[in-house]
Image (cartoon, rainbow, N blue to C red; front, side, top):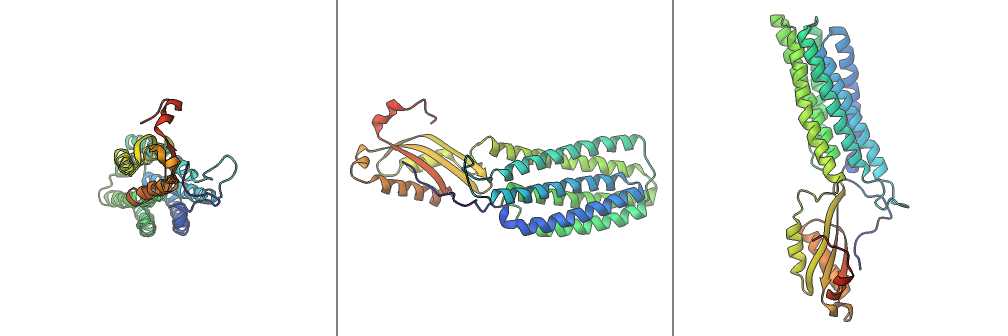
Length: 307
């Protein structure tokens, strides 16, 4: 016996609700990328080039997130019983991989330029750095409120926020070169950019892997869920309890619930299903659930269970 919500239409995912914000952030990132590429060519600044590379990774990540929301909005059909909702998490994983790759590249190139410094035009570097900073601040303002709604929104915000920090680093390097002539400041900032990118990429990858491995959401206490269910009238035990996340904002629960034999004879089973559903939505914010109600004697017909 089961109870849950239908999937005749694709779910409105957390990222999908902010499609307009992502589109605006993508436009800003593309403009910053083009401006900084031109600046890197004109000034010879590795820091500008590194920042442009990171912005390109950001733009790619946002584009992936936007594409994923379009896929996630498609209705369930055939073997895809949850539609394309998981595409958002795949996009977050790809985004993390791109960020990690950029971090490694920037770090290695920064070390090379530290050993063999190149001429840099600090005035032009500062001008293009200011343009990048203004654009990144606009992106941060767009994404700030939506950052906690999904992995993709969080990833997009972290990337733009990191770009803001690196833009400040570019300006600092330009100031040092202009005042002291120490051109290695450009390479040092590039290395710092690589070090800043790496941990954020690892965090995003770790969270995406957590979802892809169908681990229980971090904010879900399985023991508390089991306790709440067993405290309901007519419930004796719970086993094969599984909770995972299809995509951000869409947790799913399944469980086998052992109940009084009388529930199958007196018509009480539907009421018990309603009580189980209300317990989950009221205490744990799990709206999609499937329960198998079992009499005690059914245990002998089950395969090895997961408690």
